[in-house]
Image 1 (cartoon, one colour):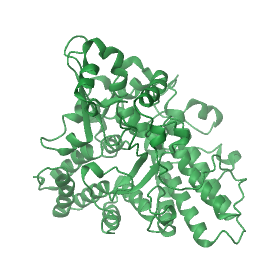
Image 2 (spheres, rainbow, N blue to C red):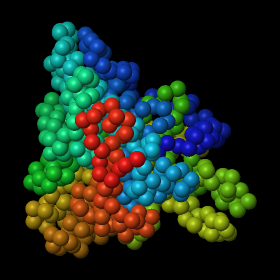
Image 3 (tube, one colour):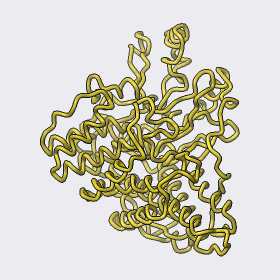
Image 4 (tube, rainbow, N blue to C red):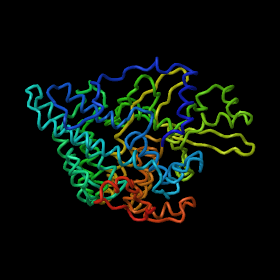
Length: 506
């Protein structure tokens, strides 16, 4: 999902010429400077060092270089292309992206390894280092409350990374320490064992973490107990533990701490709907918004410009030279845009479009793209570098699906209708278990599009991937081997205990 080299250089210059964004950016929250590199040599002899180490976990997740990681855009964009959600706007021009779109990854593709394998393991290593550092802390300044906070956040971060690793790769190594001599030669562990570690970590985090955001003065940029509950509910759903999924999502929904907001406010900083958000570090004013919005939205949205500017940018004489700025790297697929029901306000509020000139070679094609996140305005305001990890709408859909599976048709319909009502849609007509499950799957496709790869993972966990994706011509001929990514060849070379996923050979 990296921006093409020319795009990464030109877009900032263009935005700076429109308005100096860096000078308008406000410091969103005071957090101790993170420790960029966390290892087991760090000595936790003060609360500040502990806080900095934990903050370093989120620094790793957001990787402030303008490049993505699994938790900073890669999951959304790569999984979106592998599903029926996103399309690379430049087609075959960037072969590495097109391979994701066709579900035919080559071992030479440089993207999956660093973004979706290495970075989650960096987060796991950092979390393990914090856990070991806390275990060895002897200073009386490191109080029980400080230890609980650090342990809870570290175990949640480890569970979070393991969740995405196993859903992308299947069986995976599960390092539980920083001893590279031992962990570096670990075989892949079965998915069931991986999930047991995830469950243990999340249950511990729920017990250890507070139910407030006091550690960040009310900002939602570090997770609390409810973030662990949110991921636990999702894990139970994926594991088809319907009773536990419904009960866990209910704890969050019934807490009174969160509520569904208007569509316009759902992704705002610290919105009532947000459960956990990552804060993008605006280091030296180098980046204007999170990399995900930089790839899913154009540098300039035509709808933000005045009429004269719109005419200039869509003039056939200018379009070829300016399309780089007004067409995002990844656009919404026809499969997704056609799935929206008439009158669905999410189509109006959460997507935008550009109509190309009617003349050849563009022939009036419409490029529709996601706009869930706020971009930099032409005057340099409202960068809002908050990236939503968990939000309440997903919990309603988790509880709805679990209730439907348990035969609670009325309860499932009620939760489904809470999401539909917010979108301006009438109550569901589904009145049976199977009809409701189909309706809930559709609602997840629409409500959670362009967020964290939900569509890709949903198709896989419900065994619908082969049916849905094999019907797309660009993905033919289809193979179920496409449902797992390849283990980076260098990792297999370094660890003879690792075995490659089926279907990948040199």
